[in-house]
Length: 578
Image 1 (cartoon, helix red, strand yellow):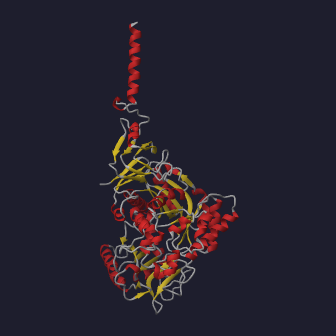
Image 2 (cartoon, one colour; image 1 turned 135 degrees about the horizontal axis):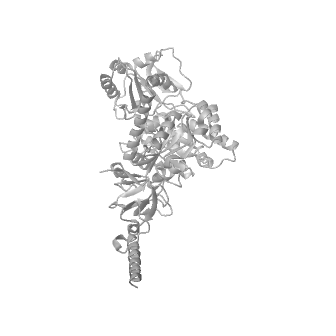
Image 3 (cartoon, one colour; image 1 turned 180 degrees about the vertical axis):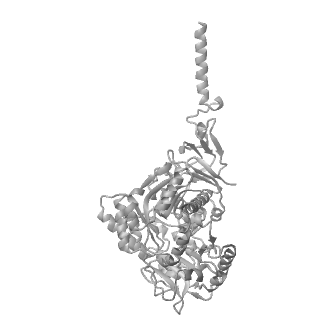
């Protein structure tokens, strides 16, 4: 009998212990399933139409397990759960950068940043200082200058571009290559032009222009495909090292880009064009868990290379959804700032010129056929209205030849200037407009000069017209062309406001909710990932950002002063701000 009583007593103790284990301090709150991390007392914009707002989130094993009230979140808090009281801060899905250049972002940290140079004299001063610190013959690289933003306008100038003379005097012993802010032109000094054997007799390459003075002499500016006349020399210099040194440089750029993204709340990144060599390196780093950002890489290779290797590089959700390769990046034209955007009518400020077709249309058609045969998206850069029309024509032709292929989600990257006749075609064809809000306010000062007022109003950055027609827009920065900061881009998207307070065709600005979707769920949709990320919904990947300001209700100026407080990827806190 005593043994029986002891057994019953032991059973009661075990049962009591079990129930206490699912109750917080036996205090009456049942723990349904202890989470790894619980965020509560926040203002959560879920971007989930079925449950648009909440106060708390529970995360377990890298996924969201609960979204709801702070009171109900208590039932997910166990002894080992990390709990963060958000004190009313704003919570949203992690920003998805839908078009930028990952290695370019990292490389921009290693070279001269010319984006803040107020005039040509400041650019020359930065180069001169770099030359003082460099060995003779060492390349001096920079990026970010824009002739339209120089104050005062450089004299002499050709179409607004300065000439190389003063730059060359400041850099007599080093080759210099300075990339335009758009990435669609470079400025070279006399040293690098001599290395490239550039003379008055050098012919313009197909799809490119060597800018010349009235006597026919090159002034130092090489637009579009003419960039390669200089860039090939730097590439030769870069390659004249061991493979280990070259790889280490690439890895450093990847690490710098990763750090910059996490600090700024970017959890996913659509990388707009990488070689197979770089994709191999990124895959190795993902295997070693060294890239915290989720990458969706567009293949940027030649038709010949893709015919040989493309089918071997299809990757979807590799490395716990940290690496996807299922799209191809190509170019139909150049940039508006360098007058390389391909236009239906001549430039208002250069009537003899309508832009450049940088990749022959027959090649783009062949690449499109290769893409659809191998299950890849096409994501073609098109800025001018002529460029956009031709890409839409290629897509429409390809779709008609492949009626069995559905839900392709091909996109036009930038889609900056679109004829009114072509706006409805995006939705009708299911083509995504991968646009960059910050380009609008950055370019606004020269757009009317390039296009004229009437054409600018009809076609320039027509986000609202596209959305109203049923098209999907995803957002980004095109970094390093612009700062990768999504808050600056969000501000431009919802205000279209310039530094002087003027608004650039404000009827095309997006609502806060539309802009939030463009930076979250729409970016996920463009990558076929809207079922795993882009909203704060149970079952989704726990990629979340916490901000100091509510992007849906704060004033316009407060958007720019907002701080990233937490960046969370796969349920792990990777950045904690002040």
